Length: 330
Image 1 (cartoon, rainbow, N blue to C red):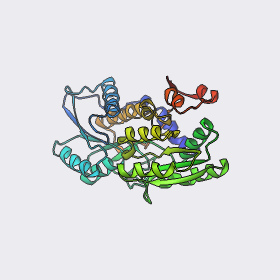
Image 2: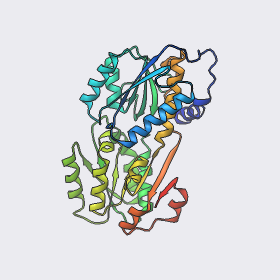
Image 3: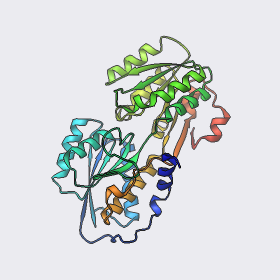
Image 4: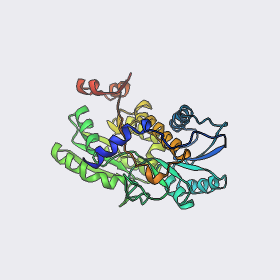
């Protein structure tokens, strides 16, 4: 059995695993510290926390009764994440939840003993957080967000949507150990097979995002793929506005890009990931050890299309995509 199938099979039954030998929620107040990579004002970040707390309540944990949840929001700022991680440790948490790699790194630097459940971390092995997905060592386990082959899927879907596309800009926050770097072989192979020219645009701030679009639109027949990164998540309004201004069809990695006005998105169901993370928190609070809980990959994915944006770009949505879409926004 392939590793992905093994982990996916585990993930599909995570919520149904028996709790034999684990204690029921006690009357003692348990403290959970949560590090979020979005801004506190971001409705998507708040919806993730809502899904997490609602599932905890279903499992018998109610904030303010037998648990206390303390959330800190870093808006993608690594220094702020480190400050918040240290601050949460002063509250003597029983467990930490970390959203995205910078928050997880901050939590890892602060403790090697307090259990940590991560969510939406692309490469926990490459990032040095765990040594093995099926049997993580130490105090860390959790849920990944993307696999390297997804980059080819994004290109295939964008080309299916707009067959005339011959050039695609890959907007990425790049480094030798980044997710974008690991995704390049798959998308390079797909691009050669489809006859699409890839143009990489490495950005690190809002100004460089503007510059990347300005350079790319000097030639025609183009599209954009925004590669996964907390920086892009926190600046999605700018990305969507630039694509609209330059009339570029763009592919994004989370549903809320499309619901906010982006053309098309394909990626994991984040609500499902946070609900599954709550199941791990429940198990750990009842006595399980992180090293005994396998790191899991996404098992639910969403294809979302924005009809209004397609019309504004003068695009006709292929029926093949309409039939496969999980959501079509009018």
